[in-house]
Structures are given as C-alpha cells and as structure tokens.
Amino acid sequence: MNRPATAVVTTTLSLLSLTALTACGGGSDSDPAADKPKANATASTEKAPSPEKRLADVIITTSDTDGFRVQETQDEYIFAKSSDEVTVDKPVCAPLAYAMNQLPLGDPQASLTRVASGQTDAETALTKGITYTYVTLSAHASGDARSAFADARKAVDACGSGFTAEANGDESPYDSVTAEKVTPAGDESLGFKSTITFRDVKHVLHGEIVRNGDVLAVYFSVDGLAMASNRPSDVKLSPTVVKAQNGKLG
Image (cartoon, rainbow, N blue to C red):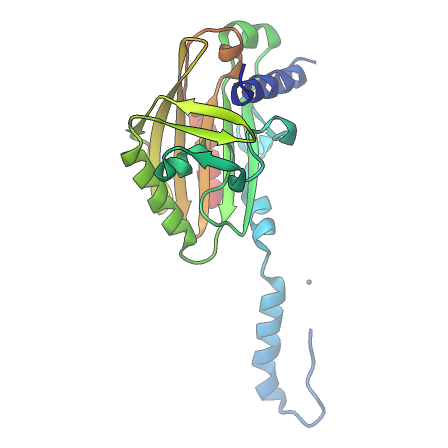
C-alpha cells in the first residue's frame, strides 16, 4: 500500500477507535482633540484578530455539525506537511493535489484543518464504511484568495485526464478529474470529483472549494476503510458539514 492510501486508512482506523470505545497617550503640550483619532486607530489595530485567530473562531466544531465528530488531523499520517513538499507531473493540476491532501491553496497567511466523521458504531463502520469530510480553511492577503480560487478552477478544466502528485518519495496518482455541480456558497464556489485506482479497485472522491472574501474553505471526502477492505467507494461530501462551515464563514 503506498503512503497516501496508507495514511488515509490509518487515519480512518485511528478515528474509528475513538468512536468505538491586546493604549497609548499624548504629551502634555498636545491637542487632545487631535490625539483622539490616533488613539482610536491604535485601539482598533490592537483589537484586530490575527489570521490564526480569525480561522480558529470560525472553524467548525462538533457542536456545529449535528451528530458529527470534529477532530484535529494527525500530522504523522499526512501526505505532506506543506505544499513545498509536493511536486506534480502537470503543474497546472497542483491546486487539486493540495485540495485532496488537506493543504491550503495559494499563499495563505494562516491555515487550519479539521476532519468530521459521522457518529456510528464500530461494526457498521467496518462493514459499510464511514465518510470522513476534511475541512481546510485558509486566510489570505487581499487578492490572493481570488487568485488561488482562479487557479483551482483552471486546474479542474485542464486536468480531466488525471495527474500524479509526489511527496517525500510517495506517489498519489489520480485517474481523472471532472467538474461537479455544488450548491452556490460564499462569493464563488467550485465542485469537482476525482477517480483513483488502488489494488485494481476504483474509488471516486469528491471535493469543493468556496471563497468567502479573503478566506478559502476546501472540502474533501474519503472512505479509507473501503481501500483497506478492497471494495469500491464513491464518497460524497457531508452536506451537514459543508453547510455548517459555509454558514460560519458568513
């Protein structure tokens, strides 16, 4: 089993086991009226949240998702820790490689990832599978989110015949990419699906990218246990999770 598939399976099993068991002042000769706007401006700057804080305030939690468990991802099972570690045989397809490996698009100021899983018992999960919907939020400087979204749209249009991503010596081949209709959200949204073949068995993966101002939300779904048990899968994004996150973004 190559590492991307192994990472998906191991993360799934790990999550499944959890299911089973910030004033300034003027000098004495200054004009108070002239100083007041400056003081207000300084206070406003101090109160502005950092990009990291902005994302932490709007990322979904278990209480937002009506029965889904929301957890942090585990770094030891990821394909790559940053986009700098990823190379793609077709560079135009790079945004899709990032989106399907929980990596942010563009040049973000901050990013945050969570994984949401349905509440189910261990036996049902093993026999019928369980969908994991990954949510990656990223905050961007003015204009970068729009540019990154445009690059992702271009990738969906250009990568229909598939592509291969590589990171740290491991390969992740995607057989095809197709645009997919999604419920409009944010300032612009984009859906896609991709097929991969693992041990001669085909799996269909689904993704969605939403831009809301200078924040991007990337959604991706997978059933790692289907790969582990060598059965086909067609894993849809959870509408509950996507709706909850888009709602928190405004």
